[in-house]
Image 1 (cartoon, rainbow, N blue to C red):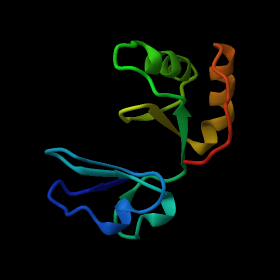
Image 2 (cartoon, rainbow, N blue to C red):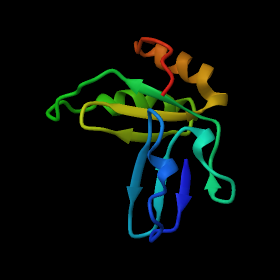
Image 3 (cartoon, rainbow, N blue to C red):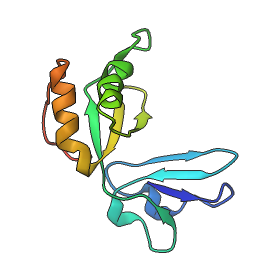
Image 4 (cartoon, helix red, strand yellow):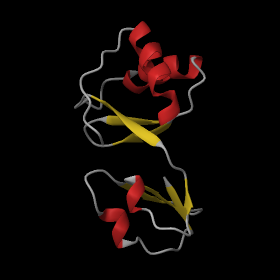
Length: 117
């Protein structure tokens, strides 16, 4: 996860790789990308891993993300969420991965695979 100034141009490195997200607001330009793509000299949060909720989820369904986030919150696991048209991704620090798996498994969520995003 990277943070740049709100008026920064979207850099080419941010749009490379298989998984990235670029969001501009009045306050910042946020980029989520593969860690090795972020150059030195910018504000970066490292060691995050993305968990993909298997979609697609129709827009009329409610509570999908909440059912995933609640057990993580109860286990004191910080998250960063990204939603796309079809699905949701929840990013957690790598150090919490095992604990997250246990918390999610305890409420019935199943691990579908190891595909890295």
